[in-house]
Length: 138
Image 1 (spheres, helix red, strand yellow):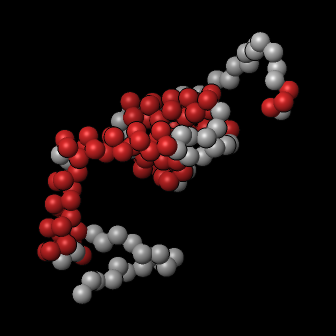
Image 2 (cartoon, helix red, strand yellow):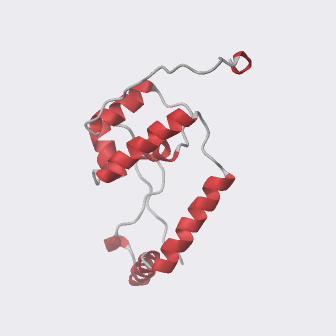
């Protein structure tokens, strides 16, 4: 019989800590973690991620996508986790993850500014001349 996960105060299920797991569950978790560390698993994961990006490309303007990717690269360069950024910014971890993967099509300037400031950076905007404005897209 499978043990039920006790709910959080808001009624959602929570993840059991290692001390709350049965020996069989701990062995299963350890085996799964070890499997994820293998080169074969990492290669397959990378292929799956790339295939997913090809099938479901991020939405939004290319400039925004590049800015979000730049924020993610800087976070990773500084060795900061999503949890670290959540603590620094007050933005929840899921939102930070979605920002980094381009799953938020239209983040607010305030969120981008807060994210950049937590990395010791600031946003810089430029206005560039284009050949001819495309009035149909406005």
